[in-house]
Image 1: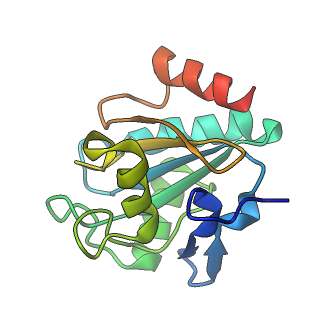
Image 2: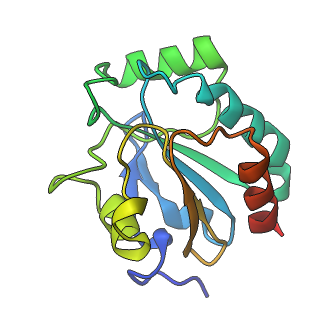
Image 3: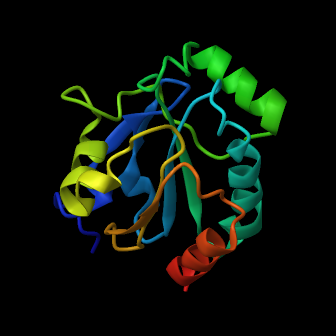
Length: 164
C-alpha cells in the first residue's frame, strides 16, 4: 500500500503543463528527481542533462519531473504553451512538466513547503534548478542546488543509489 500521508511526496498534486491533473501518486513506488526550472536562466542548459538522465534511467523506473517557476528574477515569463515549445524545441524535453507554480514564499506549492519542512531552510529552492531526490517510498532523500549539474559525478552517484 502506498503512503499518501503528508510524510510522502505522493500526497501532492500538480497540474500538468497541458492543464490536466498530475497527482504524484501516479509515480508511487518509483524514484523521482523533481527540479524547479526556468527558461531564461544561466542554468537553463541543465534541461539537456535532465533529459539525458530521463532517457538513460527511465527504464529503471526513474521519473524526472520539471516544475517551471517564475520566482527568481522573472526567468520563466512564458505561458504553458511557450514553456512547452521552448523545452521541446531547444532541449528535446519529453519528461513530464507541471504548470508554472510558485516554489518559494507563502504562495509556494505545497510540495515545496513540504520539502522545506523535511529538508530544512537550505533545502528550499533559493534559485532555479534545485534538484530533489524522492525515494520510491515518497521520502525526501537528498537535494542539490543549482550549481550541481545533472551530469556531475556527485549527482549521478546519488541517483544511482536512489534507483538501487
